[in-house]
Length: 435
Image (tube, rainbow, N blue to C red; front, side, top):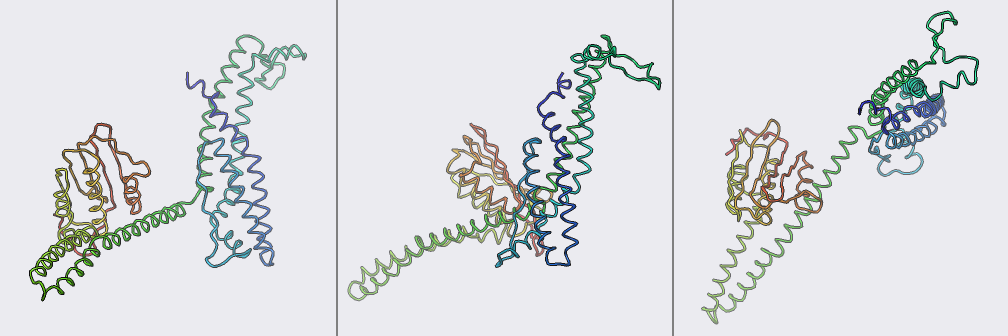
């Protein structure tokens, strides 16, 4: 039953209308592109050629925007806007804009669409017009066939099955009416499937020629990833500066003042000076511990010396929740990937300690093909999410900056499983075994 309703669905009407509009729209674009590019190419030997070509390409970019809007409205195809014009750094004015238009691959892809779409538009318009005209005429045959004998001298609709007009098959009886309706419905079903197939081709043309190119999309992704990395690095530097200023630096300043006072009292009150030196000795120990913690937060020595297994075991030992660590790696990955993996697990274990209410957690690290896989599972109350503003959302952005992925499974009531995948990169030096 759903198949029989296919010709009457809104999607069929929308995509069929798109196919019918292809011809007038493509005809206008083709004529403008062919005439404009041919004329401007012929005038390249004069000073008019390049500006005229840039103007033609600029109009074709606007034509591409119109086609994206038409595809969005009728094909329900969301095509991202292609990259904007990029002026040469340090340059501005009409010449800079003209150069940007001529250099932009969006301009030339819009021109290619206007030229290549024309033959396809002729086919789609002809196919939909023929099938819909025949199909709807035959499907509605019972509504209008009686007008033939009523207003003409013919007894009914004549179907000529041979060369002799007198041998025409007159469709005027109940059998012919039913047959016409069945044939009309079959034609409309064929038209519906053909329309959907042609719409798929139209979507491919629009997305490939009028959307952002793969290289441009990758460049945008790299720019976005770079900004994330820069922001993260700046935040880490500010954190280190704040920790040094408010922690070890302040403690060392106080230590210097205490030692200065002890020095003054050394001859007057040796016992008080000794107590002050003893207190200063305690401050030195605290300052050293803070510096060790800070250095561990930048890059722990155990990670550099012994690898992920011992480093993560050390983190697990300091976690407030009992943690089991299982690291199975054939050898150590590149230093950068190893460091990202380490700090990812550290942040996830911090979340387990602060928010999960778990009694136990499990950390698993392994290699799968060209990926370094991490998984942190806890038996807490669950309900974690990756919505913007959470720490996990920021972690997902930082992983995406290095082509990594973060997946979360945390139903209400738990358990919570967070998986991360990082690209595997071998160390430049000889492989060190993973422990």
